[in-house]
Length: 343
Image 1 (cartoon, rainbow, N blue to C red):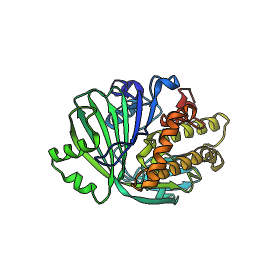
Image 2: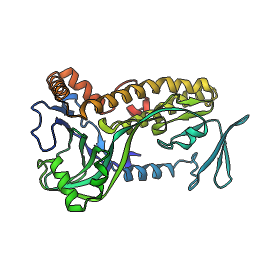
Image 3: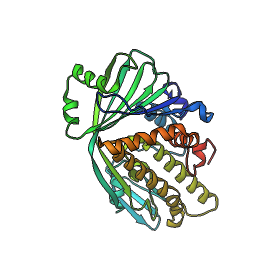
Image 4: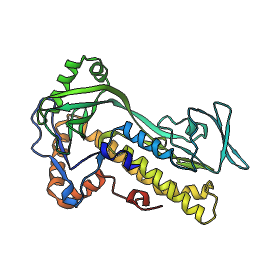
């Protein structure tokens, strides 16, 4: 897959985290992550969604044992003596040993199988846009913590960055309605001038920020994977990494069972995947929820505590390196595919 997107990938060399009021002076305490400190060429890569999707489809089309059925919608799932049968909107039925729901936060498959979720909404919305700037970013990602939420600037190829802007849900709609010049001015207020003149390039999107975690990731012949299993706040930028770990862990679990001649859709087999992934998902979900509540406010004592905390982490090498590994998704029991090994 990587060969299809490598030329569109921007390495993240450094991450700089700051805390400030809108239009105010940043806190003297900040946090700096440098890939060189952990002996890595980068802390990760930024790739546009369209290039990821193109790469995945290009790879899928080369696999002889994979059949793409599209466009189509799922209308029913039913456990049978032969396995699990999916009924499609065109009337076609497909039977397999295992069905995997990787159909997003509002997963219709999850609802069909009756798996429940713990969920709530944040009083925030996410605004996403691509920004062009006159100065090079040098592979540095920035995250400014503002009272309304984090304002992340993620380096892309060329003199471009991806903007992930968390804004109060009462203000975000008005920001989305601004004309191009006014929208650019609001970006500049938060962006600063460290990358020179800035302007939005292309469309902007917004979406409500929500939390959800499935109470169970599996049932007989059925497994949740990615956003169908969990949805976290974007404050740490770990949503995609979490989903990739799910896919890699489920693949490894299923292949191990198949090699032993076991039924890959058996509940006992699938519970191994659930035990592997649910705690990691729960821990990261709680951590990102807590970080958002800690940093998305302007309460003076809390601001002082969090700024001091950032300063201490930045000054203490082992803690700084721990968070760097976390930022790269390199923490916990990693599946083989996440380590570049064959499953």
